[in-house]
Length: 374
Figure 1 (cartoon, rainbow, N blue to C red):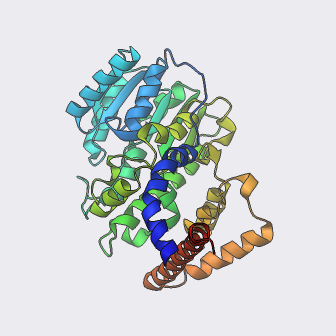
Figure 2 (figure 1 turned 135 degrees about the vertical axis):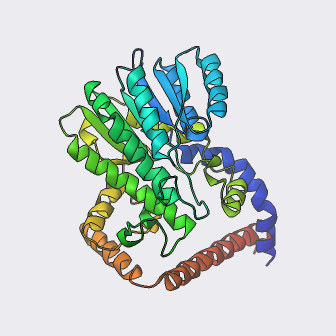
Figure 3 (figure 1 turned 90 degrees about the vertical axis):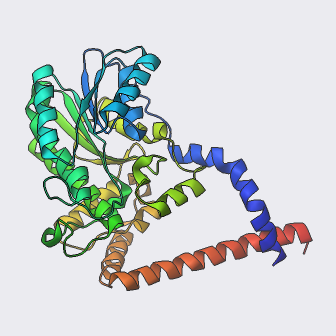
């Protein structure tokens, strides 16, 4: 008991001391590409804040002509001016784009195509998360409408320009949350049942499936596509959830900054020699091989892998388990997802509580032995 109390008293101090190193470890470095972009044209959606702002800033720093495609034009103008001052690049432009309205998307594309002869980089970054149930102007469920369908239409409208500007790239910002996603064709608009958190997961899965199919269709056209998991980033994405904002604040020392979160997007947009990996999903600068097996299972109508798979470290080829272990994991998660959602939640809660108790017991015993001398 004394050891537990000591641990609780020391824990905030220890976390404060360790936070910079932990955050540095979790940030996974920076994009090291030295390529410059004079004469290149880039479009970044949702570029007036967070990851999109940092991505646009870096592209402008490298000399690109950058379009900030934003719903809030006034805020976008302030950010554009800030980037111009910081980078010395005056070719940072703001155009209105509301991904929840196909008329706005078509208007943006029409204006851009009339204004520009080329498009070399399209970064579909904008998104919403955990919104209360609502629909877009065209009647689509908000998460699917903004995060996937809006970017799908935008990419389609700009596709010929991307082909004409080859070599060019499309980067779709997805999330690790796609592991919890499923495409419910009988409930795409969330009218039969709706969960704000899962709706976000479904849209992120759609981003990855879209990336893979687009890469397949564009093979040999000089346009390559990539989806990315930026990590857990301190941004406005969680503005619709009081719980998520509280969690983000509580763990703010360990969460990536927007600049750190933008690095994987920049890696896929700038790194030379990445064309052979078109269609792949990138997480922490690496192709996530686990994602490929996961998507194969999706296409075979098998159960979805949980995010716990990634928590076990199955993220890169080096950490890939043996074939026997892979079969075990596959069967385990198939069985896990055969239970209803309440029972699955109870199982996860049970393991989580046991993990917490085990951690406190072990740490408490350790500190007790040190300070008491037993």
